[in-house]
Each structure stands twice: as structure tokens, then as C-alpha cells.
Image (cartoon, rainbow, N blue to C red; front, side):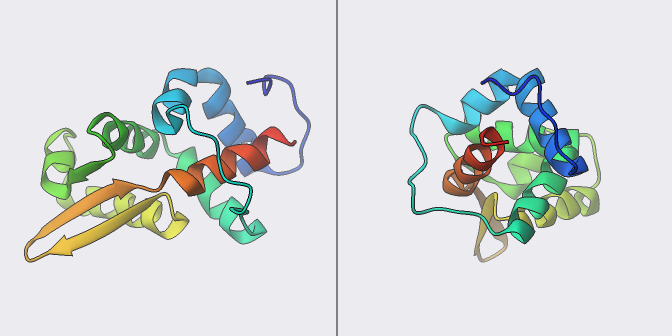
Length: 130
């Protein structure tokens, strides 16, 4: 992706672009090979939320792990892969859910986390227009 050199006033756009430039394997794993539909556009507020969510390296790692698990993983399995408390994991997943990057489906005591690729693709499409 030709995002190595860019000028912008938004700190969050710079951080997200840095993630994409420095970690292309993460971008490719998250996006697979499908293109974003032209109907999905992010509002400026949602773009900022996604930028903030991706600015935390652990959240980017969480997204990659969900993608490598086939796009869906249980909250318990996700927490077991990190050496952090359940409260901290809950905070990170809540931030990703607020940004629209993941969906959490609850079944009884279990939570299933799935990746929302459309929002991620729309974010990367807007980012590539900078």
C-alpha cells in the first residue's frame, strides 16, 4: 500500500497509517483478498474511533488473532492467549466493539467475538485516500 509518505493533521490517521505501513502482514491477514463494498463509508466520528482503537498495539494483535482463528473466537480463548486480566481484555474488546471492528455475540455465559471486515475495509479505503 502506498502509505509510507503522507501529510495530515490528524494524529489518529497517522497512527493507523503507520500500523498499515509497518505491519502489512496484519493488514493482509485482516482483509483477506476481498475488496470493500463501495456502499460502506465511515462517518468522521467512526473513522476517529477506529483510529483510536487501532492505535493500541494489543488491539491490533487481538484483531489479527480473531482473523487467524477464522474470523470468530470465544472471549475465553482470546483471553487465554494474552497474559492480562479479564478486566483488561474486556476493556480492549469493548473499545474494538465501540469502533465497530468486532461484534460480540453472547450465548449464555459464553461470548463469541467476530471480526467486522466491512468496517476495517472501509477504514483502510478512506485511509488510502489521504
